[in-house]
Image 1 (tube, one colour):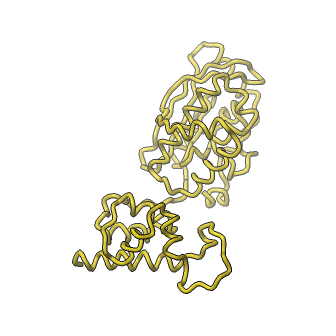
Image 2 (cartoon, one colour; image 1 turned 180 degrees about the horizontal axis):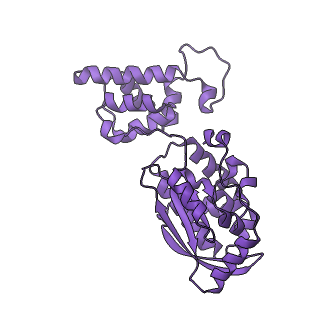
Image 3 (cartoon, one colour; image 1 turned 135 degrees about the horizontal axis):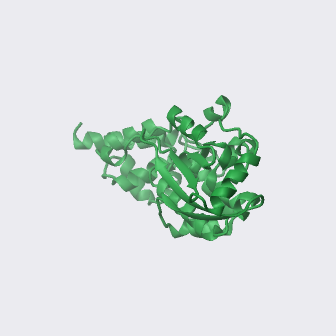
Length: 293
């Protein structure tokens, strides 16, 4: 395509995407007045993208180039799916700025499942996107909570850390641990900022916890791959555990979180006692639960 043809196609595509949306699709009130055009008005689309009506009009008319940043806000404002977004960037010659991302189902690798089963006295979790708890072993359930009893949509490490009284209360350095977890989620959010499940999690925690709302707005980032955790467990008392996290090599974004105690230490003894007294944990998601992730 020539430059003018590409600009024309970009404008036509924006107009088509706008026409497919109704005010209620994007949270705007329906005025009840007869609309002369299908879908959203130009001024509504411009307002959703936080750009001027004049600039948006010139984009639809093929009279101006759009930057990658503007394309990004337009894609979000017009509720584009992955294919629409990819096409938008391709037409605008900004394909490099918008790598396609598919949110595949979060399925734990068989090797990681076996590793969890073999860690008997060592609490271990498999964390997926958004720090969702995908799988756990018996020791992790004994340390934190019976994850199998937590509804699958709520089985998220950060959510438990902020909203589960038992999990929150056992952290002796809760402020430090919670800040690190928020920073880890913020860092992950950069890789998929349009994830609707992430937006829902952030929205819920922002509404329900003032600390989360403050720390999320501060925009600290941290990979949080290792550190020391201090717990006070209601059964075995205080535990000092080293926390290490490893990324899965398959590019899924899943990570293995393992908590260990120094050999011969009171914490090591506490973990053995805790595990020996615990019931076998429900360590796997059902097929129905996995399909919802």
